[in-house]
Image 1 (cartoon, rainbow, N blue to C red):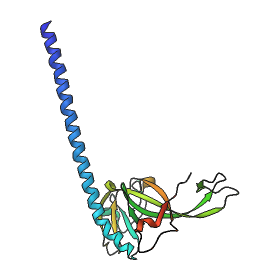
Image 2: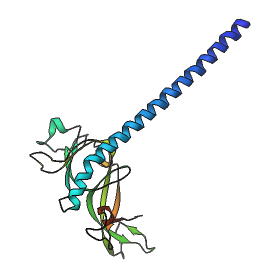
Image 3: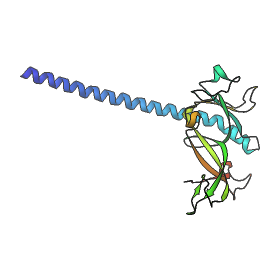
Image 4: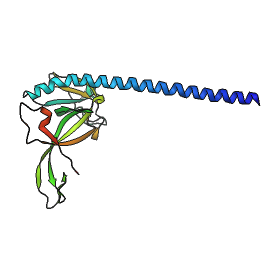
Length: 200
């Protein structure tokens, strides 16, 4: 009886020690992971900020978003879509956010519903209110590398990213903006040129 009790106590103690070690290993790996992710984010921001400064001085916003899974085997000769998406797409750099980099992707027409809410869906009786900009967000951790100079095929900044977002694009999600009517060119920060639009 005593041996059975001792064996069970040793087993329970082993489980507790194992759980304690596993918890601390996991906690340490999460801390290291967060530190690495923040360092990567800082590096990406450091590379993008000079490009944004050039844009504020009138340089074109055009950038090339290159699919890291297809770069060595397909770029620049083939831009056919496969299970990994396209090889590259054009984007227009907008701004840096806390969770990623914003790129203009399209211009859309927005309509007002009878209840006053805005929508992209046109139905009878709705009139177009204004145009809005569709903006895609690429998370910092999806950006592998940035070449601000580009190459002999693009002559514009190249963002090497994972195409694992919406419809095999590099965009995790999209949001919408309209141009501000109170923005002062030259004195206001560039990002204040656009205000967020909520759609239903």
